[in-house]
Image 1 (tube, rainbow, N blue to C red):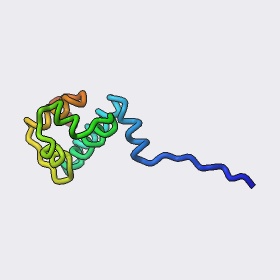
Image 2: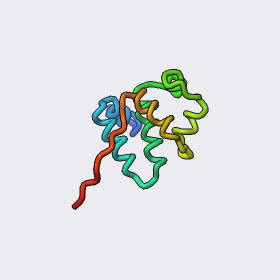
Image 3: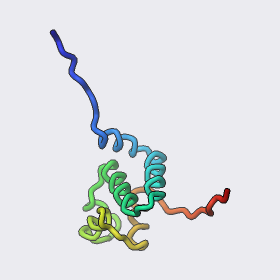
Image 4: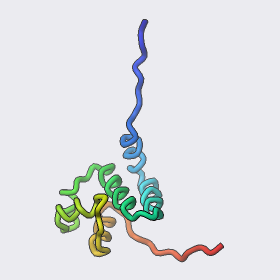
Length: 104
């Protein structure tokens, strides 16, 4: 009896494949930003960075930010300043946008 080998991907592989698309990555970051816990956004930002094959060291070089601070910033305990967050977003191809709240 020949058994057919099961092929499946891990969730990270699936996620990282989809985060290659800038529109998918933007939607992912937007959804994470809507979460009550701001740490969710920071971890999502790290996912997007990893999906693009960039390391924290690459990001540190590109943004002129301290590598250790970036590790902390993109962790569950991260608490970045806006002056650090904006260069990171820019380095991975995004910008922040402010929109009015839609009233019902």
